[in-house]
Each structure stands twice: as C-alpha cells, then as structure tokens.
Amino acid sequence: MATTTKKELIDRIADETGLRRAEVKKVVQCFLDYVIEELGRGNRLEFRDFGVFETKDRAPRVAQNPKTLERVPVPAKRTVKFKVGRLMKEHLGGEPLPVRAGEEDDD
Image (cartoon, rainbow, N blue to C red):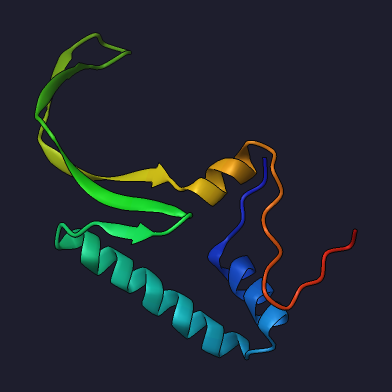
C-alpha cells in the first residue's frame, strides 16, 4: 500500500486543472484549515457522496500497558469520526468512479 502526500495531490490537481501549483496549494490548505476549524467548533461536515466528518467525545477509561500489564488511566478526549459516503463506498467496493466533467469515457 502506498502513501499519497498533500504535495502529490496538489501536483495532480495543478496538472489536471492547469492552475499554478501555488494557487492550488493555497486553496487546498485553506480548505483543510476550515475543516479543522469547523470540527474544532464541534460542527459536522457533510460532503455529499464523499462522506461526513463529525466529532465524538470519548469517555475516560482504564487501559493496560501491554509490556508491564500495569493499568493506566486514559483521560476523556474528543476524536473525529468519518462516515464513508455513497461514491466512495461504491468505489472501494470495486465500482468505477463516475466520469468527471471534461473527461471522456474510453468505451
């Protein structure tokens, strides 16, 4: 399994759209900053067909250190939950993504 970085995505978007890399980088970073800001406020973010991001409060609990078997308290915290949307679910299930605007179907 390979890892794709933000830089690689920015390069692909710049190549595909013809926009300057610096412009794409600014838009992508602005988008990510807003996602973080909204989740930090406790807001739910819904991107139709892609998925939904929302925060979830986790209760405090007691865990166990696997090396020492010592019981360790884990404080409450807020985490982010992601629920997969329809298009992603279909694509991960092996169905092809729909043709994007400006692309032609090769069939």
